[in-house]
Length: 302
Image (cartoon, rainbow, N blue to C red):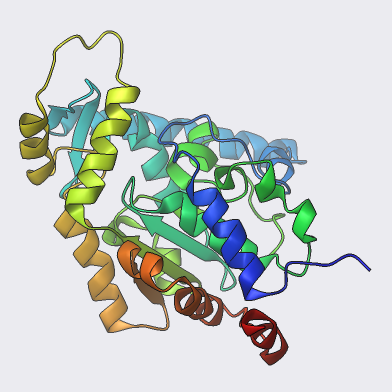
């Protein structure tokens, strides 16, 4: 019989391997297994398709009109940011963010992972995916060994609603796992009002800035030739002029949501995860309804 990674030790091992990978902040995320077909499945009835098409076109026009009215700021890598509901978003992601707000319908079994960029997103995705699917894949057959976690836990704004205005997500098997950088108060109402679970991880803002700064230095736009010093970039970071900033407003939104309802929102710290990975994996597993059995726990300590 093939051995499956239904032990906490195996889940930790796979999670640490994925943390070594690069966290992408672009729209070229591969669709996850089982998600592609659901997103791209055509609507059968012509009348419904026409109705949806008209609604989508109207929504695109509305988002474009709203975009023109928003305060704008150029990020340190030359990308245009717009200020919406107190947060700065890449202009190219504004329409997908509004589409997420308008069209996403959460199910009670959904799991939503939320972070600021460069705060442990890839790691959290790998751990959550491994916990949920530990009885499905054998250790040597885990898709995380050959593919980035982004392929199996897609971003709302960078993948799902970036590629399509209103994709059909109903056929994705439960539990559906999605991720986002969207602040709590801008999440779709269905997420906040349903029984779905939200996991948020934050990181020391100085460490987050350094990681984000180096990421943008390595991926800066060729057409943006102005050189910005690190201290100038840090000043922009402190003012919140970066993707999904400001930090404190973003973090406090989820922290306060956790304080209001700890059964709804799990608030994690990147540093705590590194310090005691075993405790935090157990905590995540319990929170999302996939606790480790006593047998699995026993195997962990052997």
